[in-house]
Structure formats: C-alpha cells, structure tokens
Image (cartoon, rainbow over all chains, first blue to last red; front, top):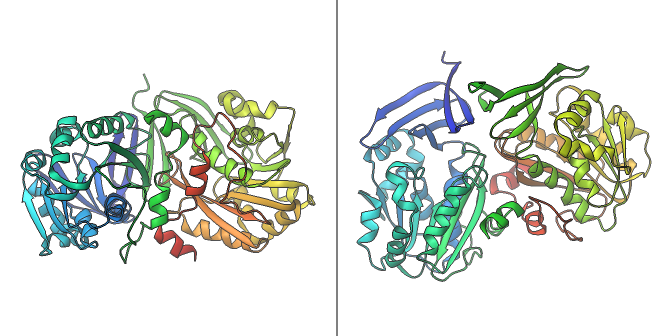
Length: 273
Length: 273
C-alpha cells in the first residue's frame, strides 16, 4: 500500500522533513542532477532535485506568486521577462498573468520534461505562444543580452552545482546590463533562519550591479524553516510598493501581502544591516 | 556519539520533522502527558509534550514575541495579564517587558519543573516578584474571575487532551467576563496551512464572547508548516495597530512586523470570510 514509504529531505545536516509517499512516479539521473517526482496524500505531486523539494502541488503557489508578483507589480509597465531556472513552469505561469513575453532559460531539459508530464498546471504555461523556452546555461545566456528585459528572475536550486554562478557579483553585473532602464532582478535567496550565509551572498552579489537591494519574506511550508527569502535589486522602481493591481485568480499574493513582506523581523534587519 | 539519534515529530499523519539529537536530557510521563527535553546541535534544547515540539532555544522567541507583543502593544495601558498554559515561562518573560503583573495558570507542574531546569532563559521569568504561578486548570480558573485582567493569553498545546476546552464558545464567554473593559484575549491557533479546522474553531469560539476577532501570522520554524496563526478577540482596541513602542531587547517583533502580520494571504482571507 505504500503507507510507510516516505520521501525524506535532509534539509540541513541536523534537520529532516519527511512526507508520506503514495507512489513513486519518476526517478532519473539527468546530466545535471537527480530528478524525482513522487505522489503524496498530503501535498499532491512533489518534485525534488538532488533530494531537495522544489515544488509540490500543495504550496507551489506560495513560492511562485511571491517570487513573481512583487517585482512585476512594482514595475509600471513591464513587457518582457527572463526566468533563469524555473523549468517546472510555475513562475512563467504567474508572469503570463501580467501579459508579459517570457523567455525561460533552464539548463536541465529533464526538469522541463518531467514537469510537463507530472505538473501540467505549472508547465502548461510553457506552451503559451508568448513563451520561449531555451535549454541553456543561464549565466552565458544573460551575458549575451543588452537592455533586453524589464524583469529577470533567478528561480534556481541551491547555490551548489549548476546554480552556483548565479550567486556572485560577476553575474549580477551582466544581469544589470541585460535589463532595460528601470528594470529589476529577483532571486530566491533561501531560508532567513537556516541559510543566512546564502542570503548575504546574494545581497552582496547584487550590490555589485545595483544601487538598491532589498529582501522580503514569505511562507513556503515544504521549504526548510517554512519561511523563504527573496531578494530584489532595482535600477529604479521601489519594489516594496505595488503600482498596479494584482492579477485575477491568485491564491496567495495580495497588494497588502506584498507590502507586508518587506517588514523584516528584528534579528534579520540587524543581520542584513 | 549520538550522531544518528533523531527526535521525530509526526506533525500530521503524512508529515514528519526530524531534528538531530546530541543528548536526551529528560523523559518522563506526567499526570497529563509525556514530557521530553533533548539537546540538539542545531536548535539547542527542545521541549516536546506528547511528541509535539513546544519550544526550542533557536526559535522560541519567534513564537513568544509574536504571541505576547501584538495584543500588549495594542492596549494603551495594560496592568495585569493571565497566561493559560505557557509553563515554559517564555510568554511570561515577554509580558514582563511591558511591566505587567502576570498570573500563570499551568495545569501540569511537570512542565514548569522541566523548564526551570532546562530552559532557564525562559522559566527564570517565573521567579519575578510580579509573577504568580498557579498549578491549576485554566478553564476553572478563568471561570472564577470577574474583570480581573487586561490581557488573557491561551498558550496551550494542541486542542486534544487537557487543552481541548480552551477552544470552545463556553470558555470564551467566561474569558470575556474575566477581562476588564477594553481587554483582549489571544490564542495560538495552529498552522494556517495544515490546521485550518482548528483555526476556524478558535475563531468561532471567540465570536461567541467578543465583537471583534482577528487572526495574524508569524514564522515559527519548528512548528508544522513553519508559519503559525494567532487569533485575538478584543473588547475594544484595534489589535492590528500598535499604540506603544516595542520594549527593548526584542529579537523578532517590531511595530512594522506587528502591522504586517495581519496581511493575510488570499486563500486564508477567503477561508476565514
């Protein structure tokens, strides 16, 4: 019956999250990482890369909506966005709600293939005519662009392996050059409780290319600590102030949630000062 | 070496959190529940009751500060508070920062005893001359009070076992009678992601005795989903608006965090409407 089959993520050396599994749907080694999809009674389908939960049906909207809509709603008229990573399509789906053209640059085709099959509510977005999918290295892709995008999103896995170069100053200098005036780059920047080192590294990287770097928070139940940080670097707009109404149909994001997400706990405000 | 000893909480039927254990400090069966204290490399001391994490050195301030200071900072001049449950002393410690007299009514002396020994930074508050500790049933205690408190806090364990009667309308009617005019009662109301039924039950219970019931959220990494809900019922003040500055020395709460905590995600606003 699979009742006592568990997917267990070793979140840190000293912490584990276990999710009961009703079936193993997909398990493969791609050129870059282990790609696993399991079905669960509590969280629906769950995608893990190298053992780290990326997406579950239950809470993917918490992550994708907060990643997408804060910057997108703070820009007065975005037209074109680039997503680096994000092969599950969830972030692209959210960006399409703003009527944007979206380029997705995912290094691992295996993630896109598995997501098309097991996460159709996310990866269906990749078939939209406004979307161009590039199976390519995001760092090289960004380096070739000049003032091409209003918004760039780093929807990567952990900063080890292929994602590592997305967390350094050199990358953010090329990202700044790839943005149009008034553009913004947003990166997932890990747990403010367990990965403060990563968060600091992202902020330092961004500061090399941008005058304004700000961190905001939101819940994601299946990510370590249940609270996730996002960091946005802006060439102009104030990312904490929505200037356009929320798209219809959202389950998490509201303009009030947007503003509230920038109210950092005392310990974090101090740690990032 | 204890390297592969883990404390595992069965958070829901389908979800587990594991924390690596460096030592088992205390393990006993009280008249009411299993009381366990372990030492961990990542979270310091950890207190569990009937297998559920109540307090860890790492994140207890996230919970206790958000439970204490939202209502306390929204009241223009609180003088006396009652805590039901909360035998670890963490909430009392926070309330003392407001200069209040505090009555603690904890049903299980074993929790107080273990906390005095293994959580001195929390339970040390119970030795303050402004604090009176009652080892008694909170429901019966509240029923004997008339306009005695400005603030009542329900810092209970899960709504099964001894805590069950703290979640029903009859209790909140007696709580309203135990409050002075302009008083507030605050309850921890579980995870907005995994325990929406409990949250709804707390709100329905409070609505029987109070004209104004509001829910706010905050992160607690070791609680299920990592995001916790708190529900406050008011006889007067707007609990979302701090009217006094934050006490000194806090690690989590700020007045901005206070206001932001009431910005509920779209799904929750809808679920509670």
